[in-house]
Every structure is written in C-alpha cells, then in structure tokens.
Amino acid sequence: MIRNILFIVAFLSLLTASCSGRKNKAEHKNIIPEKDFISILTDLHIADGLLSLPEIRYLFSKHDSIMTYIEILDKYGYNKELMDKTMRFYFIKRPKKLLRIYDKVIGRLSEVESGLEKEMPFVFVPKEINLWQGYDSYYSFSYTDTAWFEVPIELPGYYTLRFTITVFPDDQTFNPRTGIYFSHPDSISTARRDYLPQIAFIKDGRRHTYSIIRLISGSPLPSLNGWFIDFEDQSPDLHRHYRIDKISLKLGYHLD
Image (cartoon, rainbow, N blue to C red; front, side, top):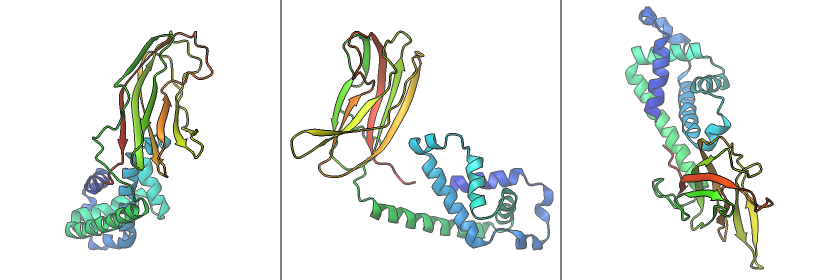
C-alpha cells in the first residue's frame, strides 16, 4: 500500500513538473525537512488505509484523495507546491535517499500496527470467511414474510455486515428501514436490545448495497438479531415487496 502512495504522490508531483528538474543544487534547501516528510508519508498511508473501510469512507464521502492529501499537508504547515517540490527533488535527484526514507516510514507503520494489536486483543480471521448463518437471500411478495434473522456471535472483534437490498415501488411498508440489534442476555434470562443506527431504504426498484461495521466485545457475547426491513409497529395487512441478497458477515480486517 505504501508503495502505491509513494507512486501516486510522485506522479502528482511529476505532473506539475517541467524541465525545471535541472535546477542547481540549491533547490534542496527549500524542501520539507526529512523528519516532517517521513511523518507526512506515514499519515498519508494511515489515511489511505482508514478510507478503505466502508464506514469511514461513508463518513468522508465528500472527500477525494487530493483533498485528504492537502489536509494532511496543512496539518504540518506545508502546501502542495512544497510537497511537489520535495517529491521531485528526492524522486529525480536522490532516489536512494527516498528508499531510505521509505524504510523509515515502514518502520513507523509497523510500530503503529504493533500498538493497535496490543490495544485490540481480538481474534482476527481472514475476511474471506463468511460467518452469516441466515438464509442466502430473502424475497417477499406477500403479507407475511418478515426477513427475520438471528446469528450467534462466538468471537469478539470487528464485524462487517454487508447486504444488497431492492425495495420495489409497490411495497406498502411505511418508511422502510433496518431493525437490527444486538441481543444481550442478562441475569434474569431476558435479553436487552442494543439497536444499531437505522438505514432508510428507497422504493425505487433498484439494488443498493450497504455495510455496517461494529465492534463486538464483552462477556457473554451478544447475538445479532433483527429484520433487514423492520415490520414492528406496522400493520400486518401491508403488502411487502422486496429482495435481499449477497449477505455476508465477516470478522476482522487486515491492516495493510
């Protein structure tokens, strides 16, 4: 991943370059100091990794990669022009030095990853393993189907629930939205519901994909329960017309 960032930053810098790459050696006096340069490259990589997570990407959906790049530079008191100049200097005149800087960035990222592992002692499994135990898909063209599910959680960690849903225009459900919650058993053999933020759906007959990421911990572990479309407090006489498929529940994510 860091190689991709270095390439992108270098490419952006070279796009703004011209034949001025043959300036005199005094150019290196007006570049970002090495210490800050390493910190900037480290932050760029961490930001890129965070923005690859669906929930984080949704929160910053109005940001593009260039805006994030500029905001990180602004945090350290530099601008894109100086970063471009610094990248041109190392990329063209000091490529071996750039590799040594790259090694220091990798070292810092390894320290960050090690710290996160100590702070988050959860069991991680490959993302390819789908832990979903409900039906592969749900389809309703009736008055009775509720798309109810109940999935026990056996390991603590970060879980991603992902699904695709189509709500058709003739669906009569009032304000269709999710009704998903964690069910926590307590000492009196009942269960406390911890509802997740609801996702509202559009009755446009088109497929939409959603992801929900949550940290699940504690003892005992809860189960994941609910309805993809919440029918509680709604009339049972409403005609329902929807399709839900491509459902997955995956534990953990890898730090690149």
